[in-house]
Length: 327
Figure (cartoon, rainbow, N blue to C red):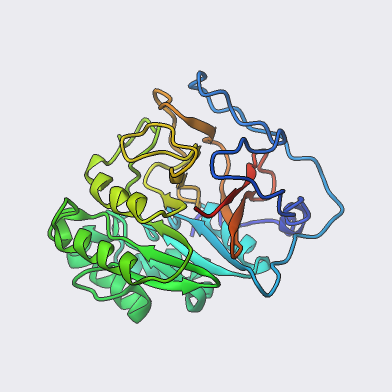
């Protein structure tokens, strides 16, 4: 692989303060530090991270940790090796948000590009498929690599419990699974799965974001019916990738309107290491953005809420943190 050297300085970034912030309502304003980028500015501005002598905060027995990123492994990039070294030091369940192996999700790419880095965390990984997985017929190498952890190969969607939270993994490659629209098999499954869940707090993730300011890929409006099902069930958080950047939105209704009381907070975390994409027109209610830094989103899932922090690779100058409460 080309340029796959990541310095031992990963320990420095893990010294950054990962302590949970004070819980707030879903519509609360995140902490003043790091300051979000003004939504009126289309240019991502990294937020400097002050050195800290404290170790990363550990989850208590009543909490669970989810570590998420998408758009991960390319044999022409060393970014995924850097993010994999973060995972070496961070306990928790790993969520891949699609496009785990480039350029086409082949068995060779999973073996040679994904395997040496993120692959060593496969036993604790709960993946979601991306469009590059389906550039190999029926995403067969993806399903073969992750096995039963990836769900039924004819569907690619499933759910699981993580601490007190219910987690729904959606296949946003809609054409491959009979659509994502109202009444589709997947949308009906999502509604039934949510109805059967007794959890107070719910998180979902998939590859193609409904809300994004990325210049490369526009909002995936076909995901709105599934987002609506989650919204009506009172879900808290949706994660996606596809655009190779980080972006956080305020809690939103399915039509994109601000909804502090019931809205879902959306994150785009296409920062797994493959490459960076630029931002285009900044979408309404975008609260924080960066297109310069690889890293993972660390979510501490509590019984009544959650804390988030973007953990950058060594040398990364951007982070973002805050808290929210369950509906």
